[in-house]
Image (cartoon, rainbow, N blue to C red; front, side):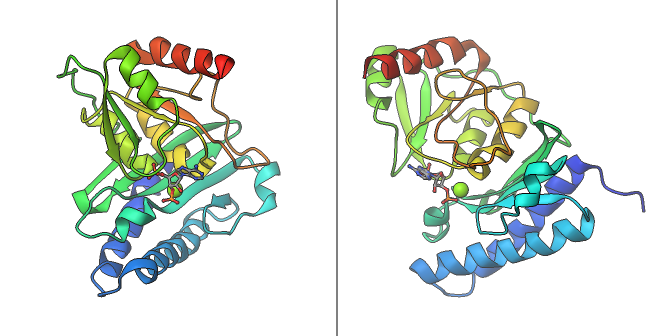
Length: 250
Ligand SMILES: Nc1ncnc2c1ncn2[C@@H]1O[C@H](COP(=O)(O)O)[C@@H](OP(=O)(O)O)[C@H]1O
Ligand SMILES: [Mg+2]
């Protein structure tokens, strides 16, 4: 058998972890027990499979395993075994995801976002095609529980509609799937929340940056990466310009 490419491997890993999470969701657990069981099962599987498939690569993960070797490594897998943990614990919600990204020599190069409850894995092996816009009104995907403070002002200014949902990966994929046109976040997040969604969005031709238009950077010493903008390219200047102005004035 020929070896999987990094793109194929990212999709395979996200799929496998997604299957594991669907099984955990059938065990009859609830609340915190379900969240913890999901986090742990997906984490353990990825921490076994990645070193098996790519010995020598470093890993940066939400659930520990942060290995300082990653700072001097050329290849780092940035993974979130379960993004949208809250929504995972509220069946039958489908807005939760598995994130697997590969960073190599300075930038993200491959990745996958599985949405197991939808039966979909978006990936850079077969990049998704974004359908043409169907709504006149801009739709902005935002966190259900922690939307950026400026988002209501932004929506009013550009006449947009807010679409709340869980999981950073699901919100980025909502732009890919033409369920929204923009995902903007601020106030807190880590590299694993956005790495895989961003590399898949880029492969689909979408715009990605910090919320104010500054470039994103990954595998930094601190994994804190608190804000993000993913959108259709034609909306990028308007949205990032608004955020840059808002931050200057507030
Ligand atoms: N203010 C904040 N500080 C830290 N992490 C945040 C955050 N807001 C969102 N996140 C993280 O971003 C992901 C998506 O959040 P949301 O669903 O609210 O949009 C979640 O990941 P996890 O579910 O992996 O913890 C969440 O923890
Ligand atoms: Mg997360």
